Length: 257
Image (tube, rainbow, N blue to C red; front, side, top):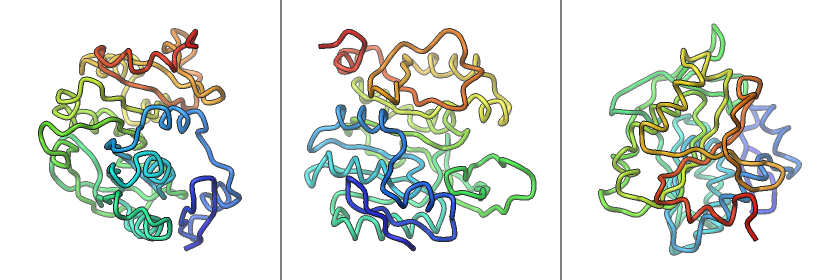
């Protein structure tokens, strides 16, 4: 393991994952706009769920924002990354407000295979290519993680193709929290690889009662989901929200003061 300093503190990186070490070890952090959105949405005392936590960049950023009165739930199925997360929370002295859950989020309780990609950021319940090693991991819905009626402020989802299954497994959380905001990766190539279409993905989200905005990673603001050119994207991060929660996002929308 390698400890790497950044603006939030330290990440702990498994050294076998050279791509991740090279990506994060110099302190330069990805997804600047998404982290800015997260920072603006979270407040001290909030509950934040980091789904697909990996080495815990968003876990660490969220913990700094919610503070000791808040709670961060980091959900990550890969054993080496769970170890890294535990070391990271201890090193940054945030273990008192972070709970690590070693499972993959899905629509129902069960067991599934996690395919281990050449870099941990591409680990997935769907094989990226043939011949990847796979391990058995627990599959569980987020609704089993959070007590009925509990307030959840923000959920981040980065699960390499299993976003819709994760959303299906948190239907009660979404219903209980009119103001909830969900930050979700949207990768057209991954959606197609797992057998979906962009149109069906978007329709499924709308059928869950959620509206869609996209994050401008350069500006840290939100905009309506583009009507054209989605199929040409490598990835973007989206904000999914119930209509009742639109006012909460107003300061991040175009034209906000």
